[in-house]
Every structure is written in C-alpha cells, then in structure tokens.
Image (cartoon, rainbow, N blue to C red):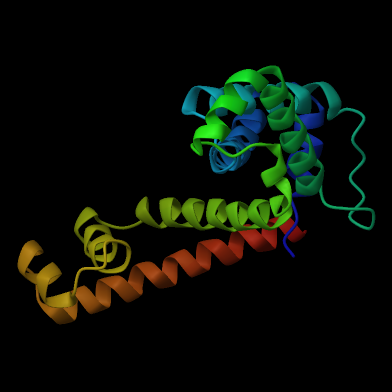
Length: 194
C-alpha cells in the first residue's frame, strides 16, 4: 500500500517551515475531517477533531520515528484520529446517546470497520488531490466537460450541447483529464514511496 512521503515527515519534524506544515495540513486535514464526518459528527465537531489531531501531531512528531517496517505513518495518524473522535464522543456522551436512540448518529461501537473506512478516505483524498492538480493544468472548458461527463454522469451529447462543442471533443477532453489525473495520482504515490 501507499506510504507517506518520508521527506515531508522529516521536514515537519523541524517545526520551522510553515510551507511544510501547510502541505501536511492540506494533505491530511480533509482526510481527518471526512473520517470524523463518516463517524457521525457534525461539521463543527469535525473541525475540532482536525484541530486536535493537528495539534497532537505537532506535539508528538518530534518523537515519531519513521520506520516503514514497523508500520505506516498514516496508521499512526488513523489511531490518533480514532482516539480523538472517541474522546469527543465520550465527552458528549449524553447528547450522543440521545442521538443514537433516535438513530441519527453513529457511536463508538461503529469503529469495527474503521481501518477499512480510513483506507477508503485516504484513497479518496489522493484522488481529489490528483483531480485538483489536473484542474490547475487545463482550461476551464476541458475540465467542465470532464466533470459533467464523469462526475455528474451526463451523457456525451448533453455535455456537447451544453458547452457548444462536438461530442468527439467531449470524449477527447474526458480522456485528457483522466490521463492527467492518473499521471498525478501516480506521481503522488511515487513521491510517497521514496
């Protein structure tokens, strides 16, 4: 499986470069937020979890020793996220129990598939980052054709009519963006494995 870029871990250990922390935050904050959201937390609580996890990473990263043979960094981060979510749920147990009784929120017993959910969210974060990188490299019409066709599920003719382009242009644009996304995804993976 994919690993975190050890260079980034080394850079954030120094606690001196805001750009490195910003890159770290941009990569992991959306993942932590989504994981908290999947566990049934409200947006404000998800933001609180993100902040708690990032502060905990700042405090503990100096002692963290990157040893891929012993485990992945993101597994360490997953456990930290899991514990912060459980702590928040315990602190708010009365309201959580009331919400659980009404069936509107998941409680800590929903953690059984946590690792699988974490892995899905990790893959999603990598894909979203790859799509954003591709979006920054192409024109808005090309990206819009891709988005409407692939993400929104429009058929090629409807996209062509909507954008005033040919159906074959929609097909070419879609494949151009998909190729770029795959390329950026592979680059992210390669960087994380070196």
